[in-house]
Image (cartoon, rainbow, N blue to C red; front, side, top):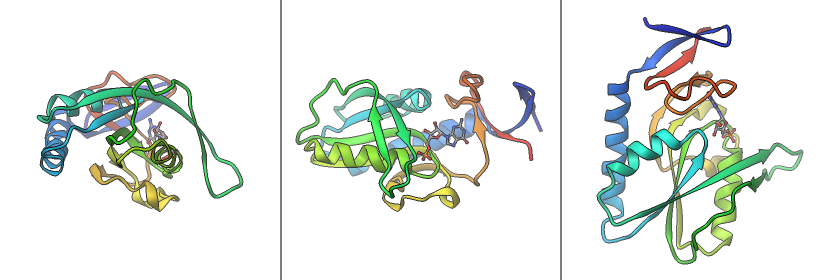
Length: 179
Ligand code: 5GP
């Protein structure tokens, strides 16, 4: 088992770069099939999803576009999470078939709020792909991604764009915190 140390914590390899490429290829194939005849607009959620978005987008064979947002979510006392778009959307999503690209859906708070906002901006459809999904941590059922790379247990992971205190994003494999 290959392990690495980041900021004093030990992580074990969970998915190799080869496993990841296969997972991403499978998601791309499903999207290519489901959106045949359409021109989807992908929205990559920075920072974590940049690697997944890059690999996925290269495998999309449809005429399509990509744009980027940075989000901040607040866990309030109300059941609806508030999500602030830190970098404004630079593309008009009116009438578009939007596919959000996220790195990981945990409680679903961020995607619950963001998808709600996008629908309010007049998108024709809003779907979500997430490289990873933690079903046992989900609190907002409407944030369940349609296109999931892999379901994982509720454990902290890093690598492949995901960080621990901004470290580890450059790792080509995915690692899980040793328990
Ligand atoms: P949610 O709003 O679904 O609770 O959280 C989503 C965000 O939390 C992700 O975009 C990611 O930034 C962060 N996150 C959740 N779980 C993990 C994890 O296991 N590792 C890392 N690096 N970030 C995580």
